[in-house]
Length: 540
Image (cartoon, rainbow, N blue to C red; front, side):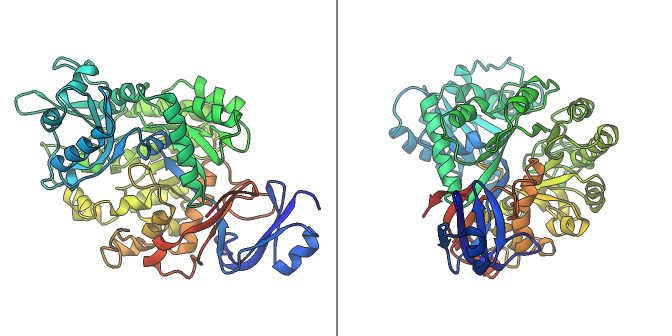
């Protein structure tokens, strides 16, 4: 029987309702023809080749619902360095070492620092970079990609002076004397770093993308949603030209859903949708930012922060709410999905209201789903409201444990007592779409699952029992949220997310049964093989 093949395993996750079965996947071409017992497979496949993985665990390919692919590829390549450090001085010293292997006078680029995790926990300034690099421009992006740290040479190269006005939605930090510190926050960093990245060699960037694809496949990630990273035009980073070039050359080995920024002009997204309808590359919708992050007091809150920087410190929207409403309704009128970065409780509640209006006026998008991204500081009423309008919660389990002391420090005990409420979403019937937000956290499939079911830090399994343990979920739901949920938000649920007849044969073979694995040992689970469209795309 031509173009038919079979994969068998003792443990197959078909779907959340069928999470652990001895089964065979009969594939015809790129799609699943049948799921049956290994004994029944012979009657359906004749003398087709059979691969029996024995005691391994097979599940749908993981689908990252929220990544910044350009940045993930870049900061895991030789073009830049990635280092969080324990202090400002340690980060500068690491950059010195990187510079020794990257001589020249061009930009030095790095990422990963988080000042709130340093000792002491204080924002950096250009002075430390100036001492090490008085003449060479340096751009150090923060771990959460919301802040850019420059030296004086970097400020000069970008044309930023004491008199320069930051872009709308951004801030130039200044010291008590009004002098620029070299720290650019939110839209200011996002816009100016685009000029830094524009200096990178295209051939090197292409190699970084291809290396990134292989790293994804090596851990069973077969689909990603590439999310815009900007509140303003000029710093989108959803590089459709790179994807289309790779696709045309047969060098795109996994599935990509692009979500460029929504700035009220829909020519780009409509052009992408009109020409990209294949199985590998699509553009289901758009993305925007409504606020920042609570650790920097840029998330938008109803009530002031518990440790306010100034009287009435509630953060602020990065986009005026009426402008955001215009963006979302404009997309909805055209049948285009929108995904909004919302972290603070006020940003979340206003976004829910906007999406409710969009649904009532225009119905559901043609492809994909509307969603709110990150959704960290919300209320039980918000969860119920999301369920009522079928609004997807696109959440990143690793965010839960970046710093388990930060939420209470910034938000107070009451608000910090209901965050990343995975179990509450499950009870309410809210679709969860898991991702990483990489490179803000590692691009690690097993960390996604581990953090969801334990809510413990993956490096030391702390806090014991998990942070807000009542919001832990079981492995079957976690896999569902990392497979079917992202497929739904990307408009691919008919093709991806479960192992059912008629769907694309994207799946991963893991070296142990996730349904029976010790939750604190999940990170030790490794992929054995990854299939995309029924083809073995990677093998250990």
